[in-house]
Image (cartoon, rainbow, N blue to C red):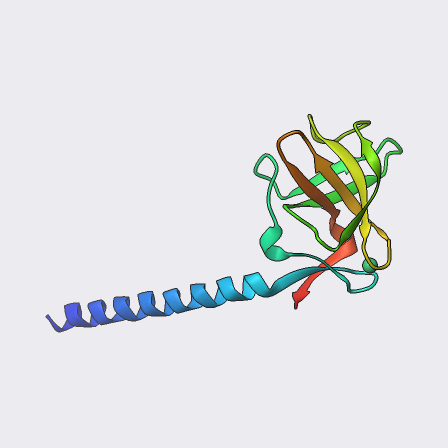
Amino acid sequence: MITLEKTTLFKEDTEGSTAVQTADETEQEEKRIIACKNCNYQISTVSEKTTVDDIHIHTFANPHGLLFEIGIYRTADGCALEGPFSGEFTWFTGYSWKIAVCGNCLIHMGWYFGSQSSSFFGIIADRIFEGIE
Ligand SMILES: [Zn+2]
């Protein structure tokens, strides 16, 4: 009887602390930003991370054989877009792309991909870092 009461109490404590921890983590996650490694300018937020084919980080080679690791983001308001859309050598079937650069220092950040129904940014993983706003 005593053993059973102790077990019940322990279980309630555990559930309580887990719930609080989850709320804190969610709040922290919303405040985390993605910034340009070159100039610290805010490019996007961690909450804008998304996936294509259930994968966030995609690795591709460009026509010159250079490898790029890009992370997929719904939006990247800190990027500026250059030039017209191109469908050449596109990495995602059905999508055209534009070059995306840092809106502050203009370093190449990645690509903006657009189709008739959706769009996203592919940001080069080693040109950004995650930080607190
Ligand atoms: Zn920059």
